[in-house]
Structures are given as C-alpha cells and as structure tokens.
Image 1: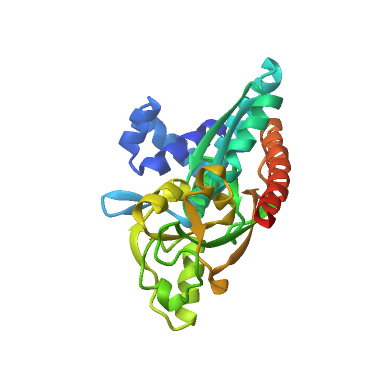
Image 2 (image 1 turned 90 degrees about the horizontal axis):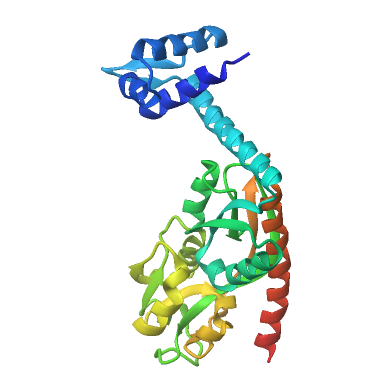
Length: 307
C-alpha cells in the first residue's frame, strides 16, 4: 500500500525536477527526500526518475504517477472542503470556468439565482476561451466549465442547458449594417476574433476557406469575448459572437447582425466536467441552477427575436 507522504514528496520533486529545491520546499533534508523516492520506487518495483544530463527527467511510469498524484491531492482537498461545508452548514466554494459569451447572457442570472437560493455560496470564476478553460479543468484548477459544448480529447460529461447561434455582428453604423453581405464582402473589413486554437475561430476560418474567399482580416485578436460587444460598438470592426448577446438590453440599440446565412454557427451551450470527477453538493447546485437559467433564457431570447 502506497505511503501518502512518500507520494506527496514525489509529486513535489516531479514538479520542481530538482531534489535540492524540492527538499527545501518540503522542509526536509535532501537525503530524506531521496530515501522517500527510493522507498516508493521499491514498493512499486519501477523507476520513477532517470538522469538527463545534470538534471532529472520523469520516466513514463513517473509521468503517469505524477498525473495520478496531482489528481489524488485534488481529491483530498475536495473531501476536506466538502466535510467543512457539511460541518459548518456553508454553501461551499465552486470554481467555475466561464466562456466570454456566457458571462454576458448566462452568468448574471446564474449568480442572481444562486444568491437567492444559497446566499452563503462562493463562486471563484475564471473567464476565458474553451481551450484555456479546458486546460484548467484537466489540472483540477476549476470544477466545471459553463459555455459552448465542444469536443475534447479527454473524457468529459457535458450537459446541454440551452442552444445558441453565433452570427456576424457589427455596430449599427457599420457600412454593411442593414443589408445582406457576401463572404467576399465580409473579408474586406477588419475583424475582432479569438485565437486560432478556439473552435469558433476554426469554424469561421474553415467557412471562408471552403468558399474560396480570403480569411477574415483580423485587426484585434482577443483572449476573451467578454469585452467584445463594447469593442464592436466603438471600433467599427466586425466580430463573430452569440446571438443571445444581441438581445441584451445593453447592446440591442448599439449592435446589429450582418446577414449572411453561411456564417450562422449552431451550437449547444451547457456545463462540462471531467468524467469520474466528484461533484460536491455546492457544485451540483451550480449545475442545477445553470440548467434552469439556460432553459429560461432560451425561451426569452426566442420571444424577443420573434417580436
């Protein structure tokens, strides 16, 4: 049976790849750390480190054990937090990754409902694109992602809560406002878009490429779409953003959809978490509230657009 202390020491050594620094961080001697790692290797009957020049390098077994060790440490922390929640009657802390578009049309209502139902809950929110947020999820730095549901390499659970359409948007005084625009016309104007690693950008670039048109002329590449609506209204640049944002009262009078039926990206929006991850009562509450808010807002957005 693995010794938890030996495993924790190994994880620290693997993070730093330097036994001297790791032992200082752990406040133990370097020989004591070396003995701990040797004991772990003997128990597992496999080498965890190998020499690489003057430094250290993880073996394949070491890399796998490091990943599992990080996940196990995260589980210990989660268990402690959950027990603390139950013993104190607190709402708990939930670490949530939110896409830029979801911060506009989902997050405010989610926060409002949670404050009403669980006033002592605390949300720790990271706003970003799907590629950045999923990296945080894999590292157990966040518990769930609220935003568009996209395909990931790792096994995840995805719960759709609403539908969304991504369309071309501009300020109401843009030269293309109020009339249909071809892909070629759209390629002549400047754009605000996320990085090429983001699925939405990849879909857009692919549409221009498949129709033999120049790609969008990206004048501003941005790491979060949360601030894009305001930038569109002021900069005169085009962008590709959620139709749900256009019905928000704040932007209804400032932004307009540019009509192009080819550039309408249908997508599902919901909640993503790692398969097999433990969901605390507080996290489950966030999931339930998000589902409720998403369904309500989808109905409201449809009514506004029909009017």
